Length: 232
Image 1 (cartoon, helix red, strand yellow):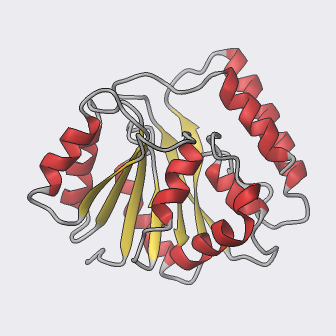
Image 2 (tube, rainbow, N blue to C red; image 1 turned 30 degrees about the vertical axis):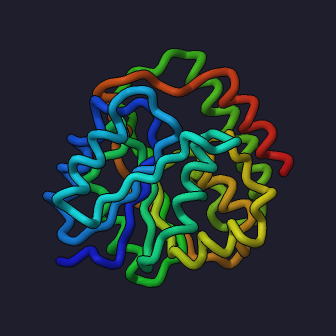
C-alpha cells in the first residue's frame, strides 16, 4: 500500500538517540511516506541524523526552527503543518511512546472520511508516579469542560499522537492561530477546541510505550501552558 498521500510531522528537541531509528521504522512500514522533522533548536545531532537520511530519501525533510523567536512543541507542529502538501498529516513524538506501527491504521481511518483520528491511550506501559496520574486526570477533566457539547469531548484528546486531514488542520491554524498556545504541548487539544462541533472524529487505541532514550519534556511549564490553553 502506498502512503504518498501522508506526511508524518515529528517535533523534536535533542532526540538524536531516537530519530534515525524511528524514521527507519517508518520507511520500512510505509512506502513513499513523507516525513518532516520539525526541530526546535536541538543542541545534539538530531538534525544531522535526519539530513543523512534525507540525502538518500527525498521524502524525509528537516525543518530547522532554531532561529525562531518562539519555541515550543505546538508551534513546531503548526509551522510544519503549514508546509505540508499531502492530503493527510500524522503527528507523533520521536521517543517511541507513540508506536510507529499504528500510523497505518490512523491513515486508513482518515481515508474513510474522518477529519481527525485520535490515537487513544488504551493502556500505559510505563508506571507513572501518583503525581503524574493526578495531573493527567485533572488535565482531562478540565479539557472535557472546555470541549463540552462536542461528541469527542470524552475521547483521549490530551495526547500528541493523531491524524488529521491537512486542509482541516491548516484551516484551524489559519483562522484560529491566536487560540493555539505556541509554547504548549497540547496541539491536538488546541485544534479540537476550534473545530466545528460536527467534525468527524474517530479513535484508534494504542499502548502508550516507554521512552527509549533521551529525557521527558514534562515540567511545571507544560502544566502552565496547558492552563493558558484552556482559556484561549
